[in-house]
Image 1: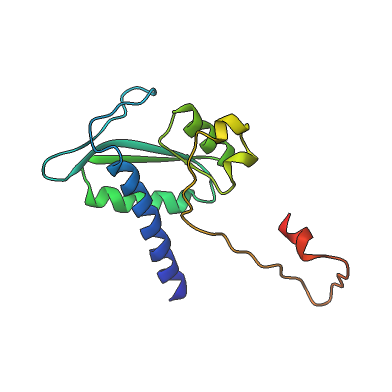
Image 2: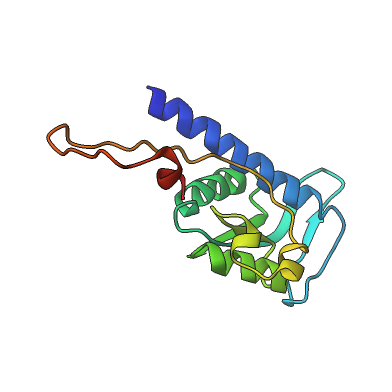
Length: 148
């Protein structure tokens, strides 16, 4: 039950971010990548297309959010691609995609000047726990070493 509600919450957050991204393009716009346009008509329906690339860890979440968004906005197309966090950040910085999915900060993958062009939107937090077999004796592992 917890897994289903967590999935619902995460999907809602991603959907909100994607709706925000599309709503931010409320008038007809075009990017350097060519024919990508987004329009919001008088009726409030969203049309056009948007592309996200990047983190394969976030890809299933982004794909589910895209599907949910497209179910409600049948004239809109959301394309989600993988490739890794670095790819998503580079694609977004170059203007090749509208959303660069990443599970690392831009400053970790891009030069400072390119990273400064991007805006981070936290859509989820990845938690982790160190689990060891109690028969294995580890006596010199620090919290700081786990966080690196």
